[in-house]
Length: 243
Image (tube, rainbow, N blue to C red; front, side, top):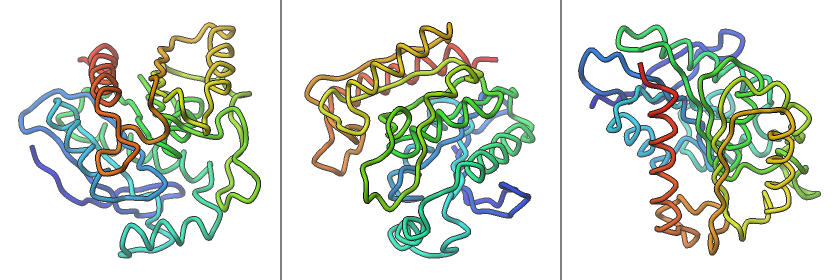
């Protein structure tokens, strides 16, 4: 594969940094916009982008904190973003749209686009799915889709459950049964809304897993849940991103 840092046009035409990983070959390949977690545009998130390239997809991860702290370390950039209340929803949608258009402009693209996100990125993947025309979206334990974050949270995120009717694509949701944000009750409410609106979705919740069970470098890592989750993601993208 080839992996590199590029510049793309984000929300409002702003030039922002992004990490592009793609397979060698003519393709055509489906595209995945990777939405990084709240800790930022870091090494583990870039590893995820490279994993998708290894699976045969063009993966592009925009640095959502490019404007707050250009050139800063992931920790410092994430702190700056939190101090400002987080990434505004409108800007997130514009940045994901810009990433999607950048992928589609590549000669090896088949024109199909999915989003995937973890933690805050899970919510933002859902947000992209109800705001843009996508081919698939994956929400990995995204909080504040049904209920707002707890009082005192520095990040401002309004619930999105009232926008289920606008979902443009199939949705895969992966959750931990021991998570509190989102809790199993929130997951059940979201699933009920998706069913009532006739949306195509797959939800899977893992016993013994809490938040961030995909994170290999954290105590929250749960190998069995993560392995099964990756298999489901690969199957889901194979179904909806194929040429």
